[in-house]
Amino acid sequence: MKYNKIGKWGIEISELSLGSWLTLGNQISYDETKDIFVEAFRNGINFFDTAEVYAHGIAESILGEVLKSFRRDDIVVSTKIFWGGNGPNKKGLSKKRIFEGTLASLKRLQLNYVDIMYCHRPDPDTPLEETLYAIDYLLKNGYILYWGTSQWEKERIERANILCKEMNIMPPIVEQPIYNMFSREKVENEFKPLYTEYGMGTTIFSPLSSGLLTGKYQKEIPENSRLHKFKFIKDSLEKNGLFDKIIFEKIDKLIKLSKELGTTINRLAIAWILKNENVSSVILGVSKIQQLRDNLEAISVKDKLDSSVMEEIEKILVS
Image (cartoon, rainbow, N blue to C red; front, side, top):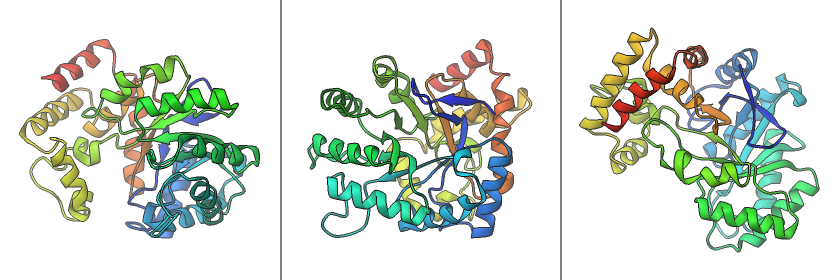
């Protein structure tokens, strides 16, 4: 396992990490969760990601129990704040929402602090300065060590960096966007100034494009799969033009290439992401321990992706 700094910052996280969206509290039991996280740690994963909204807080509570198995200084834990429930002051990035949301997350996680707190979405209804004052308070009082953004637009992240400098506040160190073979524009092009001018890193999610890049949806949607259980995921893929004949044809070509390399399409897709120097960590979402072990094999595939293989992949993706 390789450990990367997040952009220019000193903290180091494993190149593969483990998330908890749609798994903890939804798909797997506590015992299964513990086995997966222990196996992940045994294989070098030190970065675990969650959010207050995942399973309405249950994911954080389960993760908190699991994390008792590890020494705190051996792991990096992140959570995300934005959706805390229904009613006034339960959504967004006001000072009240961020403060109360973070303290509630810490209670569920049974931690004194999280390493990274993400603002889970931009909040156009709250002045950015107010959000930054709240973050500064959390930083100075030791509730969070670093902060970042998730699914923010480049212009708003740049504005946050500028304001942080003016207000003498630690700037965001990381953005958490979607990035995979079929969703590339932001990470590869739009965000370039974030890496070069502000020294930010990325912790990316949906590396397999909601399972498309496993090849299991080529003919049908299997029972017990995510697309079968969570209709909104399929609807989102269709809305973004990712559940159509052209995409499936590209996947067939990628499956063929992966076989020629002696691997599988999911390992190929993850290894391809790991080749991007601006990716600090790839967040995996797994519901079975064997699925985790399979995805971990992507690390060994990375070295097989020389310039000629990367060019061949690019031809498939842009065709």
